[in-house]
Length: 179
Image 1: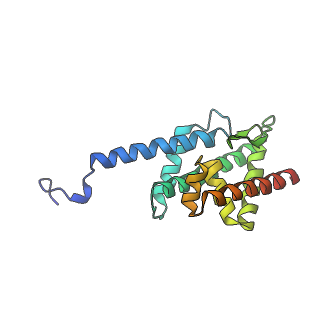
Image 2: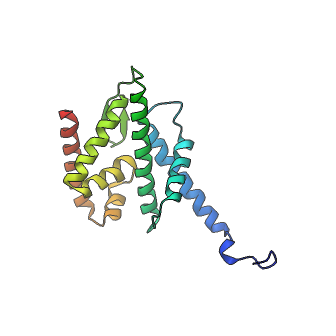
Image 3: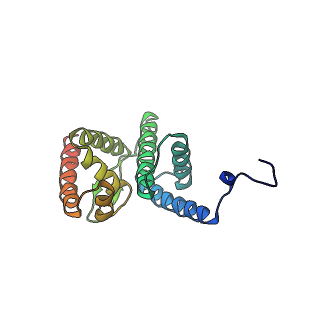
């Protein structure tokens, strides 16, 4: 099309910009949560968000809705954090021992970089046992969704999600203790 009659597909409505800005802020919230897993000056929230955005844009995923997009973004960020942990361990930087606990508020608290890899392996085991439990942990623990929102994303009742959450935490704790 010429410059006097622009292609409507090229237009960008202000409401779209507002939605993108809102998504960006939600990605930053998820990235801050993920970044707490590895306290480091070299892995910052903005870099995590931008790398996730690039990975998502390069992929061929069709996102059903905002929650689906954020769930996929959280998984991408989790993978980046795990890759970063592996990189740090490969460089054998001692003194980075970390401990991860699920607290009452279900927030991630990490004090040992090696535990991030343990968590990832435990999550992979959980995925093999029950993929729905693994998705629930990703949504609650890594993305920070409430029980009700996670249940909605998984198309299950809030009571089932609460029951599954207890089971998932027990299975992960058992797996992490055996490590």
